[in-house]
Length: 197
Image (cartoon, rainbow, N blue to C red):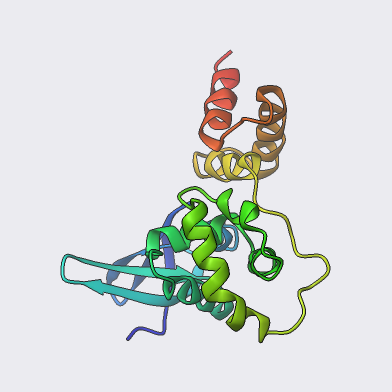
């Protein structure tokens, strides 16, 4: 129904953006990959490719920096048990080529690292998406790794007003100190705790 939204960036958070267009503020839900590409300054021009979600009890707009991101989102939504919120979580955690590599290599463990994806759903993703993803050709040799908690925490800290480079450095240091079990929320709390010292 909607193809894209073009206007001025009114506000942004890691999970959503508000775009002012036609005298209205449009709230658009976004993945972290799109958040990273948004202008840093409010009032800057912005264009998002849209997916309109409509159900009897809910309506929402999902926005993406590129048409490819939107296609990835829509591909995930075709799988039984994957709704828009979970599809956004996958997009935010696994770049497309890393996800495609995991599916084509049968690497369910890589997919279960995404919050909200258990073993059964990972198996369904592998089964239902293997053929369509195989048709895209061989996997790029340097398919990127999954986004880690330190980067997720850095994006959240940047949204809170931290300088992006400083947020990345502090989040990486906090994640190292917490250890392998670190989650993004813990990392953010640790950075904020250290900032109050």
